[in-house]
Image (cartoon, rainbow, N blue to C red; front, side, top):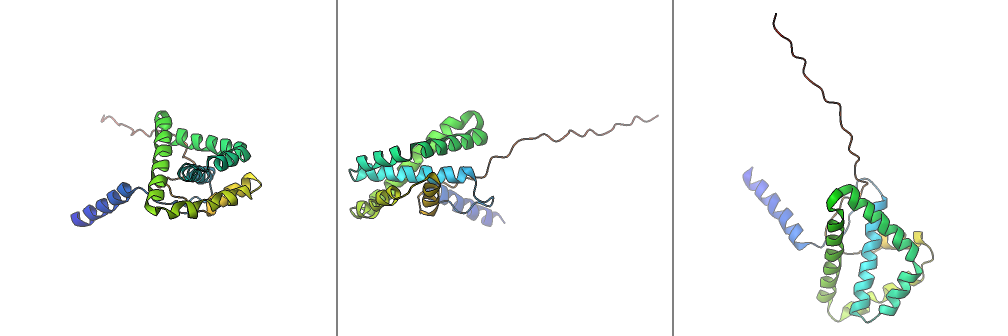
Length: 172
């Protein structure tokens, strides 16, 4: 029993240390947070590509074209972090953004010189999109690297169950 728990803990630790997993289908289905994480991941991947491949103008054009959509998805992401982490939401959100860029940059470094050849086509693909829904569908279909797996269902609301007290009976 101890060895199986130790093995499970080791597997979990290795997964956390490795740090680059893609989002799996969420048990709660397609949620606004899931969409927001996908769009943020795509935006970050395009930014890393732009910086690595000297394509800042193409990234700026993407941001300008989808500014409203990107801001709406950022609001959803902020809501997710607020409802999930409370007072530490901003720190957790900032950590996520930093880890996201780091994981994607690392992936680019591992790809070497072929990275730009592989990724530059994404700018043409997103440029062909017309609506926010198109962007959401595109980001959902892409295999965008994320730093960790987040539960992207809406955070549960806390409701307190009524406190049940034991009746105390005094012996007569």
